[in-house]
Length: 221
Image (cartoon, rainbow, N blue to C red):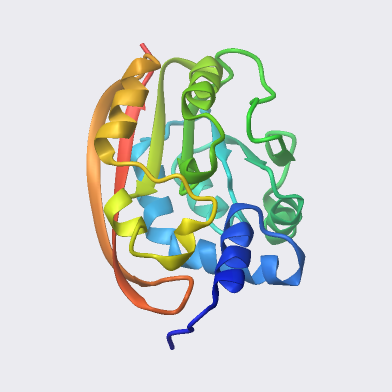
């Protein structure tokens, strides 16, 4: 059912989508995982995960998809980074039996990735780029911690689609495919593939929408 929200409610929703907190944040995290699962699983498949690889996810939410990641290959290492303490706690709770020294969730400031150079074989992020303070700076951080020949998948919904959602007026930075491709190339990534993903889903305000998203798979030479 469609829910008509006023500007204050739309602003609160946008804030929750950026940084879930409180009781509403738990529900938002659940809805994000459920509504974004096709984007997330498609992004994971594009990484072509191999045995013994180390994976970094940026903005994992409640990480209802961790089991899917770990089924892609044997002996994978996974670290998820979040700015939301609530989402970190929810991810730990949801995946408690899977956690180990090589599979864990950590907090970070959303700007600096707290790992040494060339730490990860594969990196992915879904629907977080709207909230990066400086896209070029953060892409350089991703490049720094990615191993040579490592892959990175960056997944987001198109600017044209996102502009149709009423809450994106509040704190969302929207990008076209060309803008992101140009920024990736500027920051030394090589483009491997660009995949279009169209799906019918329910927006955060309850409308049925036809979402258009892009998965950009790139690598570090």
